Image (cartoon, rainbow, N blue to C red; front, top):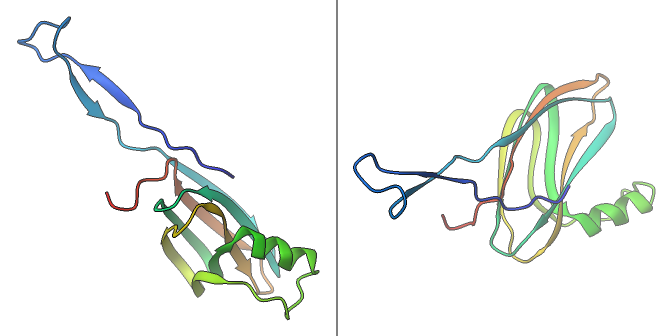
Length: 142
C-alpha cells in the first residue's frame, strides 16, 4: 500500500487586503485512513509502505484481544511467506510490540524502500481491530 505525500492548501484573502494581490496560505491538517478489520485466529496481515529516507510512518491499532505488531523490511516478509512461514527464516525486525491491546508504532525510515507492518494474532479467537494511518507521510524532522 504505497503512500503518497499530499500537501493540501487553501487560499484565504485577508478582509482588508486586495484579493487579487495578497493572499494568505493555510495548511489543512492531514486526513487519516481509519478502518475496522477482523484478524482471524492464527493469522497475520501485512500493511506494505513505500518510504523515502527520513520519512516518518505512524501506525495506530486498537484490538479487543492481545495481538503482536512488528515492522520489518518487505523483502524479509516476502522471503518468510515464500518459505512457507519457516521458523528458521529470520526477519530483521525494526520495531516490535507483543500482546498489545493498543499501540502506536512510529518509525523513521533510515533508507528508501518497502517496509511491512505485520499484525499477528496467535490466539484461538478472531481479533477485531481498529487501524489508523496518516494519509500522508510527514518528514521525520518536522
